[in-house]
Length: 258
Image 1 (cartoon, rainbow, N blue to C red):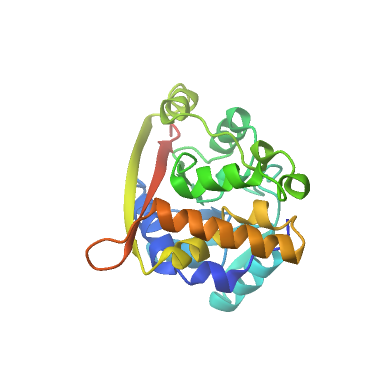
Image 2: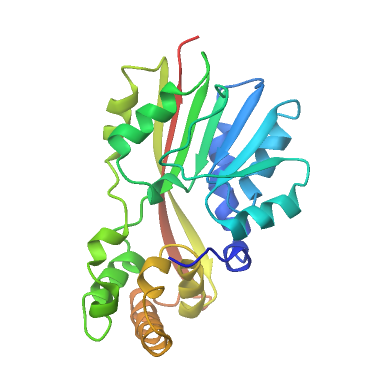
């Protein structure tokens, strides 16, 4: 894929940061010496961690140069490292590994999640939030269009473009034998959006990227036009003219024994 676009991502920063705040609110730590924001993006979630743990050594990790550059501009006093989450190992055991809307891009959760948990310091916390919207119209329509001509050829197998997530009970089962506390929950956010085009703009900065990045300009334009037409039909206008974008998210907080 092409690199991430921090400007496009930040157009809905308030909406994207809300689950980050709600995840952090459930982290059962009064203090922390080392905190890692795994998949830090442009630093909006890292900023929350700096505010929550002012005495901690907070570090952000991402594999996007554009996102890291944006994060460093936002928080010049924070360390930001380039790394692939799938292979990342901390230099020293963190008290908090915080992964807000990042692990859904990384495969093999059956081994990834236990490995991250085991990397914590005694008494440390693993906190994860992931979109759980694969069956929402926004994402079903991506896959349906990607399977049609003329876009199917350049895109290829649409099923391989996203990591398979476990059911929330599966994450509980992975962590419960290791943890003294496992807290899992779902939230379905309802975001009022100005138009179908606004919904397309939202997902274009994240979930739509693997589908449109392989397309040459003309096919990308036609894909986006047809996708917006389908989104317009799937999300009818409400009484105020806006569209409600339902956005399910999965939350997991687990604490290691002291």
